[in-house]
Image 1 (spheres, rainbow, N blue to C red):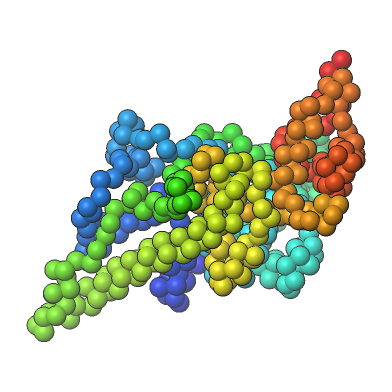
Image 2 (tube, rainbow, N blue to C red):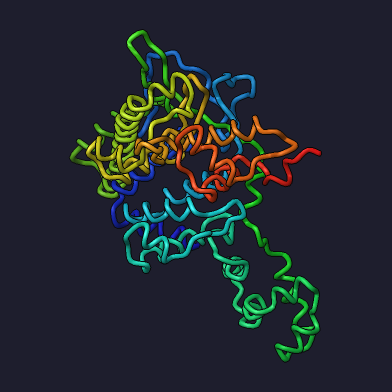
Length: 434
């Protein structure tokens, strides 16, 4: 598999950096699984003794060793979104900060069916990067699961799936490229005629195509809920909000003193010494990576919570406009450091458990030129629709006009349409009650 080759290559090139970036993007559950595996495979690591009384761990999706009744109420569940799945893979397989930034932009423009809804030219213009770099990262994302993701049309989607299945028959790809409409109409004889091949040869190829998934992203809307452990908990104190990093969900690990002492022996067998040194190096890299994850996550969370504390206490629709780049500038770190830190993380707030990325929001200027959170715009649109006369529901254009007249908010009709569809609210004709 190309994924395995890429991972092995990166491990040879920069193992410490690769480990650090990988751990930074991990959820608490993923990190727990990694640590448990290292405790089994690396004799230079051993579980330390913690003085704290910890809540029971939820069963890992890999081990399933603890009973269901050991779970606490704070472990939330949510639908496994397509973006969650893709961002997790992105964090594992990108090589550079630039690739991470490009990948984040690409994934943000993939719709619920799994298709990329902007052109490479638009992405290049948005990111101010060469189109060749955009195409390179898109090619990587198209190797992610689910197979066929990130394509721009059905033909490309099915072709990607065929390549993943190691299909090489040029006739098969020719049919995908030129005859999908004929397949939909079951004009198999016409396909055979135009390809100048007997129907007996064409039929098995069509059967292969019919087994492919033309909408690879849709399966994730029906996924069973997945257990989510908040990586951060916000506690309300008299002096304000306190940020707690939830490291208690994975075991504390330390370097084995026995193996440290063994390395000090002059008569240690050279082969054994090399083995122990390699394991010791891997153990130290893991501990450094876990420590850096905790430090970085705390810095990002504390700054983020400080900015958004009013919304966190009351209503998340009142979040202040904030982007990854803006927070990175305040922290004096690279934007992709913030991106990796936020990726796949969840925060428990007084308003409930939310994705850490949901505390970031873009802005729209109101009629006075003041920056208004997009979340506030979305909430206002939903309230207008909830309060409308269902016999005469508001059109998107009417909503845009009301936003300007009543709230002094500037939003184009297409913007209203986009946000309405995010709430999965049907268009005007389908909301009308006669």
